[in-house]
Image (cartoon, rainbow, N blue to C red):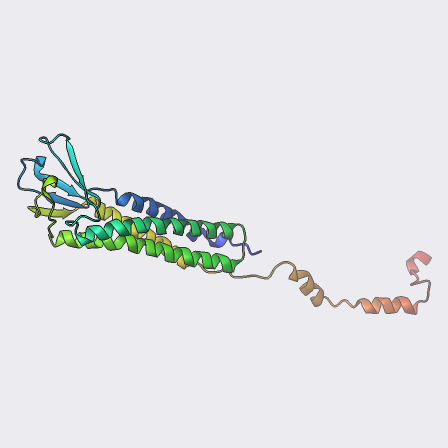
Length: 243
């Protein structure tokens, strides 16, 4: 079996990047502040600041029952914009694909350290790299789409029970979008590390050295046997022993 452990240090680092990227991607959909809305009317929304995420919209209020008021945004709601609906689907898809990518990558790294056939290791790394890139795409597409909506100052027609106007005074890109970009970069780099794997160069083993050594030596066992045969049945006479 080939010794491959020395050739997969970069892939082991890619496995760590992929695992961290998956954890951040799983937490991404739960972040509320993808969009930061600034409101002119502060009668209900204290401070005139609201946060719009993928699954809910929240704001602080001293008028309502709870200090932090949140309302869920469902995929089936009529007011849900397409970029938020896509984010709900793609973020969950990214978690599932990223989990499979980490399992495949971990299995491939394990095979490399245990000296499994390099062909299977190479196939595992390529598969893991493609899955990590697919995970990054599922995470990056909704993030960039929502960022474009914020920069274009698109509105959301919230129902009356949200206590939010359809158009804010202004809106900004929230930390959630920055976290999504960071996790996507980690996944892209992880996939690149796996795709860059190359089989180690095979060197001559020590088993071939004795044969080469014997071939280089000018030893002819047949000449010794011929000398013994010519001396008769008693073998060669040792002159030193006779003296």
